[in-house]
Length: 68
Image (cartoon, rainbow, N blue to C red; front, top):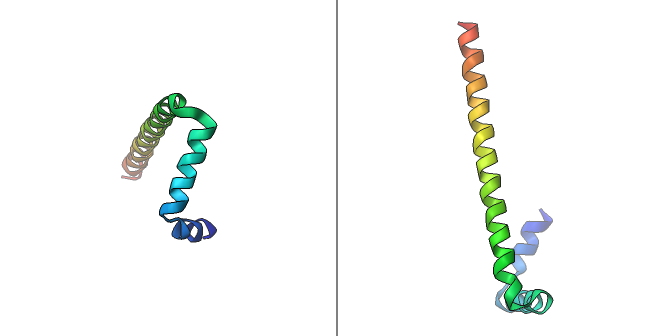
């Protein structure tokens, strides 16, 4: 709940400040590499959750057939 309150308070100046701090910490050349890594991590996470959902539905179907 605290996170939703925090996100509700972020406005334009705060986002600009965050971007400026990120640029200072990592530099302009490092940011695309970081974003690429973040994107591939999100992609792997989505694939893993999709696989788990498929496995769960197969297990449910298998149990349903056993009961019949």
